[in-house]
Image 1 (cartoon, rainbow, N blue to C red):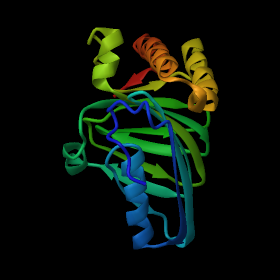
Image 2 (tube, one colour; image 1 turned 90 degrees about the vertical axis):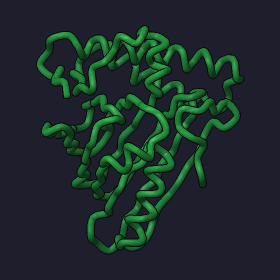
Image 3 (spheres, rainbow, N blue to C red; image 1 turned 180 degrees about the horizontal axis):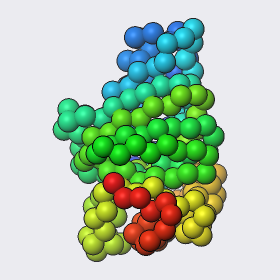
Length: 219
Protein backbone atom coordinates (compact mmCIF):
# COMPACT_ATOMS: atom_id res chain seq x y z
CA UNK A 1 0.00 0.00 0.00
CA UNK A 2 1.03 3.59 -0.41
CA UNK A 3 2.62 5.28 2.56
CA UNK A 4 2.22 8.68 4.14
CA UNK A 5 5.29 10.83 3.69
CA UNK A 6 7.97 9.85 6.20
CA UNK A 7 8.33 12.73 8.60
CA UNK A 8 4.66 13.77 8.55
CA UNK A 9 2.71 13.10 11.75
CA UNK A 10 1.05 9.67 11.45
CA UNK A 11 -0.84 9.38 14.72
CA UNK A 12 -3.88 7.85 13.03
CA UNK A 13 -1.96 5.12 11.23
CA UNK A 14 0.16 2.96 13.49
CA UNK A 15 1.19 -0.19 11.61
CA UNK A 16 1.70 -1.07 7.94
CA UNK A 17 2.97 -4.31 6.39
CA UNK A 18 4.19 -5.40 2.96
CA UNK A 19 5.26 -8.69 1.39
CA UNK A 20 7.13 -9.56 -1.80
CA UNK A 21 7.32 -13.16 -3.02
CA UNK A 22 7.98 -14.51 -6.50
CA UNK A 23 10.58 -15.06 -9.23
CA UNK A 24 13.84 -13.14 -8.74
CA UNK A 25 13.57 -11.19 -11.99
CA UNK A 26 13.53 -7.55 -13.14
CA UNK A 27 9.85 -7.20 -12.26
CA UNK A 28 10.59 -8.33 -8.70
CA UNK A 29 13.47 -5.83 -8.50
CA UNK A 30 11.04 -3.06 -9.44
CA UNK A 31 8.48 -4.28 -6.90
CA UNK A 32 11.11 -4.49 -4.18
CA UNK A 33 12.39 -0.98 -5.00
CA UNK A 34 8.84 0.31 -4.60
CA UNK A 35 8.42 -1.45 -1.23
CA UNK A 36 11.75 -0.18 0.12
CA UNK A 37 11.05 3.34 -1.11
CA UNK A 38 7.54 3.31 0.39
CA UNK A 39 8.67 2.05 3.79
CA UNK A 40 12.04 3.75 4.15
CA UNK A 41 13.27 6.46 1.77
CA UNK A 42 13.79 6.39 -2.02
CA UNK A 43 16.25 3.63 -3.06
CA UNK A 44 17.00 1.76 -6.27
CA UNK A 45 17.24 -1.96 -5.45
CA UNK A 46 17.98 -5.23 -7.21
CA UNK A 47 17.24 -8.77 -6.10
CA UNK A 48 19.94 -11.42 -6.43
CA UNK A 49 19.49 -13.80 -9.41
CA UNK A 50 17.82 -17.03 -8.43
CA UNK A 51 14.62 -19.03 -8.63
CA UNK A 52 12.74 -16.92 -6.11
CA UNK A 53 12.86 -13.84 -3.89
CA UNK A 54 10.90 -13.39 -0.68
CA UNK A 55 10.80 -10.45 1.71
CA UNK A 56 8.54 -8.93 4.32
CA UNK A 57 8.41 -5.45 5.83
CA UNK A 58 6.53 -4.17 8.84
CA UNK A 59 6.44 -0.52 9.86
CA UNK A 60 5.23 1.15 13.02
CA UNK A 61 4.67 4.90 13.26
CA UNK A 62 5.80 6.64 16.45
CA UNK A 63 4.14 9.91 15.49
CA UNK A 64 6.57 11.24 12.86
CA UNK A 65 9.24 8.56 13.47
CA UNK A 66 9.18 5.30 11.49
CA UNK A 67 10.27 1.98 13.01
CA UNK A 68 10.73 -0.57 10.22
CA UNK A 69 11.51 -4.31 10.41
CA UNK A 70 12.73 -6.12 7.29
CA UNK A 71 13.36 -9.77 6.52
CA UNK A 72 14.66 -10.42 3.04
CA UNK A 73 16.58 -12.70 0.69
CA UNK A 74 19.84 -11.52 -0.93
CA UNK A 75 19.50 -8.05 -2.44
CA UNK A 76 21.44 -4.87 -3.13
CA UNK A 77 20.59 -1.22 -3.54
CA UNK A 78 21.87 2.27 -4.07
CA UNK A 79 20.87 5.76 -3.06
CA UNK A 80 22.27 8.24 -5.52
CA UNK A 81 21.69 11.88 -6.26
CA UNK A 82 18.35 11.24 -7.98
CA UNK A 83 17.01 9.33 -4.95
CA UNK A 84 18.32 12.01 -2.58
CA UNK A 85 16.61 14.70 -4.68
CA UNK A 86 13.35 12.71 -4.54
CA UNK A 87 13.43 12.57 -0.73
CA UNK A 88 11.07 14.93 1.07
CA UNK A 89 13.23 16.28 3.88
CA UNK A 90 16.42 15.17 5.63
CA UNK A 91 16.61 12.14 7.90
CA UNK A 92 18.91 10.39 10.32
CA UNK A 93 18.46 6.61 10.38
CA UNK A 94 19.66 4.00 12.84
CA UNK A 95 20.04 0.45 11.46
CA UNK A 96 20.25 -2.60 13.73
CA UNK A 97 21.27 -6.02 12.35
CA UNK A 98 19.35 -8.85 13.99
CA UNK A 99 20.27 -11.85 11.82
CA UNK A 100 22.51 -12.15 8.76
CA UNK A 101 25.00 -9.67 7.35
CA UNK A 102 24.91 -6.42 5.40
CA UNK A 103 27.65 -4.38 3.71
CA UNK A 104 27.17 -0.61 3.48
CA UNK A 105 29.34 1.71 1.39
CA UNK A 106 29.24 5.48 1.65
CA UNK A 107 31.75 8.30 1.13
CA UNK A 108 34.48 5.81 0.26
CA UNK A 109 34.03 3.83 3.48
CA UNK A 110 32.89 0.20 3.62
CA UNK A 111 31.18 -1.13 6.74
CA UNK A 112 30.46 -4.86 7.21
CA UNK A 113 27.68 -5.41 9.71
CA UNK A 114 26.95 -8.62 11.62
CA UNK A 115 24.24 -9.56 14.14
CA UNK A 116 24.31 -7.14 17.06
CA UNK A 117 25.91 -4.33 15.03
CA UNK A 118 24.27 -0.94 14.56
CA UNK A 119 25.02 1.97 12.28
CA UNK A 120 23.80 5.55 11.81
CA UNK A 121 23.40 6.93 8.30
CA UNK A 122 22.50 10.29 6.85
CA UNK A 123 19.86 10.59 4.11
CA UNK A 124 21.75 13.42 2.39
CA UNK A 125 24.72 11.17 1.48
CA UNK A 126 24.98 8.69 -1.35
CA UNK A 127 25.14 5.08 -0.23
CA UNK A 128 25.08 1.46 -1.37
CA UNK A 129 24.14 -1.73 0.44
CA UNK A 130 24.66 -5.41 -0.30
CA UNK A 131 22.89 -8.26 1.49
CA UNK A 132 24.68 -11.54 0.65
CA UNK A 133 22.27 -13.89 2.44
CA UNK A 134 19.06 -13.97 4.40
CA UNK A 135 18.77 -10.83 6.55
CA UNK A 136 16.67 -9.57 9.44
CA UNK A 137 17.14 -5.93 10.44
CA UNK A 138 15.39 -3.02 12.13
CA UNK A 139 15.61 0.64 11.11
CA UNK A 140 14.52 3.78 12.92
CA UNK A 141 14.02 6.78 10.59
CA UNK A 142 14.01 10.19 12.23
CA UNK A 143 13.42 13.58 10.57
CA UNK A 144 16.48 15.70 11.24
CA UNK A 145 14.20 18.49 12.48
CA UNK A 146 12.79 16.12 15.13
CA UNK A 147 16.28 15.23 16.33
CA UNK A 148 17.14 18.93 16.50
CA UNK A 149 14.28 19.36 19.01
CA UNK A 150 16.23 17.41 21.63
CA UNK A 151 19.79 18.12 20.47
CA UNK A 152 19.39 21.85 19.96
CA UNK A 153 20.69 21.34 16.44
CA UNK A 154 24.17 20.67 17.79
CA UNK A 155 24.43 17.06 16.60
CA UNK A 156 26.04 17.12 13.17
CA UNK A 157 27.95 13.83 12.90
CA UNK A 158 27.05 12.48 9.44
CA UNK A 159 27.22 8.84 10.48
CA UNK A 160 28.79 6.32 12.81
CA UNK A 161 29.17 2.61 13.39
CA UNK A 162 28.00 2.14 16.96
CA UNK A 163 29.95 0.11 19.47
CA UNK A 164 27.70 -2.83 20.28
CA UNK A 165 28.60 -3.08 23.98
CA UNK A 166 27.49 0.42 24.99
CA UNK A 167 24.66 0.45 27.59
CA UNK A 168 22.89 3.29 25.74
CA UNK A 169 22.45 1.05 22.69
CA UNK A 170 21.11 -1.83 24.79
CA UNK A 171 18.65 0.58 26.42
CA UNK A 172 17.43 1.88 23.04
CA UNK A 173 17.07 -1.55 21.41
CA UNK A 174 15.22 -2.94 24.43
CA UNK A 175 12.90 0.06 24.47
CA UNK A 176 12.14 -0.31 20.74
CA UNK A 177 11.39 -4.03 21.23
CA UNK A 178 8.87 -3.17 23.93
CA UNK A 179 7.41 -0.25 21.99
CA UNK A 180 6.80 -2.33 18.84
CA UNK A 181 4.62 -4.66 20.89
CA UNK A 182 2.43 -1.99 22.50
CA UNK A 183 2.25 0.83 19.91
CA UNK A 184 -1.10 -0.27 18.40
CA UNK A 185 -2.71 0.12 21.83
CA UNK A 186 -1.33 3.56 22.68
CA UNK A 187 -3.59 6.60 22.56
CA UNK A 188 -2.35 9.74 20.74
CA UNK A 189 -0.97 11.39 23.89
CA UNK A 190 0.96 8.26 24.88
CA UNK A 191 2.29 7.92 21.32
CA UNK A 192 3.69 11.46 21.44
CA UNK A 193 5.27 10.71 24.82
CA UNK A 194 6.81 7.52 23.36
CA UNK A 195 8.11 9.52 20.42
CA UNK A 196 9.79 12.06 22.70
CA UNK A 197 11.33 9.30 24.83
CA UNK A 198 12.65 7.63 21.67
CA UNK A 199 14.36 10.85 20.61
CA UNK A 200 16.02 11.26 24.01
CA UNK A 201 17.34 7.68 23.90
CA UNK A 202 18.60 8.15 20.34
CA UNK A 203 20.41 11.32 21.35
CA UNK A 204 22.13 9.40 24.14
CA UNK A 205 23.31 6.81 21.61
CA UNK A 206 24.57 9.46 19.18
CA UNK A 207 26.45 11.34 21.87
CA UNK A 208 28.12 8.07 22.84
CA UNK A 209 29.15 7.53 19.22
CA UNK A 210 31.18 10.74 19.39
CA UNK A 211 33.20 9.43 22.32
CA UNK A 212 36.47 7.59 21.61
CA UNK A 213 35.96 3.85 21.28
CA UNK A 214 37.05 0.85 19.21
CA UNK A 215 34.00 1.06 16.89
CA UNK A 216 33.15 4.76 16.93
CA UNK A 217 34.14 5.08 13.26
CA UNK A 218 32.56 8.23 11.85
CA UNK A 219 31.55 8.63 8.22
